[in-house]
Length: 139
Image (spheres, rainbow, N blue to C red):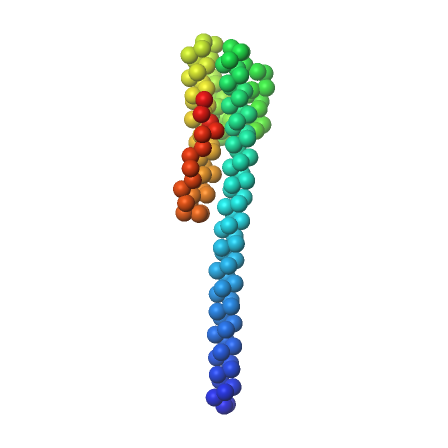
């Protein structure tokens, strides 16, 4: 075989190999960016869920009576492990007194904050950028 033919074959293999490497790298970058976008949308969805739950508790404290849809809203809107923790705290704390209501509210805010931070941690891990802490769950 002539040297020209070998040069064409080697050049084609190298060019195709580099194209394949670039394609693989770009595919991984696209998957990572897509996952970050999905997680950011999930974070926004969770923020809305937690805000509604927080408002139920805040209104209950202000009125000194709990809305009947409070716990069902937790069970429906939140994952099972989170709603079970809220129900456990609800049963453990005497929420008939104002101080008990405030303690309950504080513990629920902590549970909801942990629920939100799961997504924050995943986004930070993927992007390598620390997200600013949200103030949505402040009482």
